[in-house]
Length: 348
Image 1 (cartoon, rainbow, N blue to C red):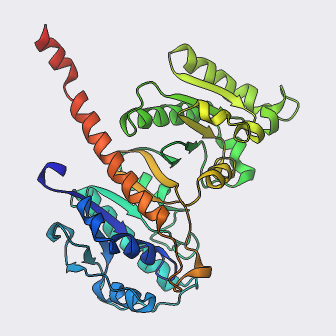
Image 2 (image 1 turned 120 degrees about the vertical axis):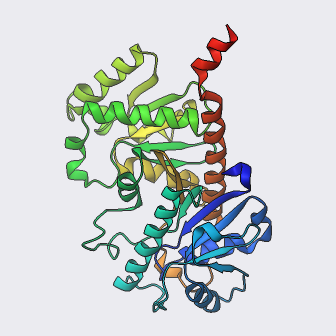
Image 3 (image 1 turned 45 degrees about the horizontal axis):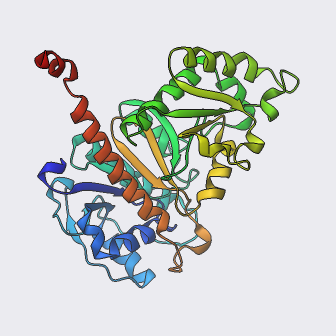
């Protein structure tokens, strides 16, 4: 834990043919980053050396065979495999997907054992990762299975936070997936995260409508009136600062979003298009609601520039800093609220 040294930050390497390795290496190529945490990449010495040679990088690292043996003050590489995978920058190969999942599984295992404190995941390709052993549409769904809690895809910056009622769900299935229990659960999860992970004492949350113009009183769909509005009213009556549903088309352009601590969008593109438009390169994908902290950059594998040394590592660096910030906030919150009733009795 933090009192024994710097926060141990694990990194799953993502698709080897994308920019994941590049942005991770560039982030910790700045030696000052080692003042903030102990970085641990789950891959292999040969893989990292090969990537560095291809990218024209020369960043010192320390190879270990187990995450429990890492050295503080250095970039550590946990040797997850002995093979030398073929690198084909810009290509969505099955081999690259297989190694991406091996890295992720090793990192999550270390996270569960406590060998690392937080996890930052480099981008994967949602197609080439699929196999009989791994059948998930993305990181969020896999982490929801492996870790404790109720997961929420939460796109965050210091000034804008957007959560999703449904994440990797086909548009045709969105309205069927949004039921009262889901809405309540997501509101509770986002509220708890804002309090515990971001230090916001009384969060104010906005919900975006499911249909255009939030259904126009049932003219363009009844889901907003029949599902969202009753839950919002119910939760507001029990003290939650929850408002909406707001018409999504004008919510961001009118700056209404600035009046809230977080926004809960109905589906993926409704929330992520405005988020990335306003925050691209500074945004972080945070899996809220779980017992462990995981973040990732707000971009994908970027095959079109992979291997060219052109990748901007700003978002990955933000993901690192956000993971550290959330971990510290959560640790402090849990410490302050631990045995709170017992402490109150003692005071009497």
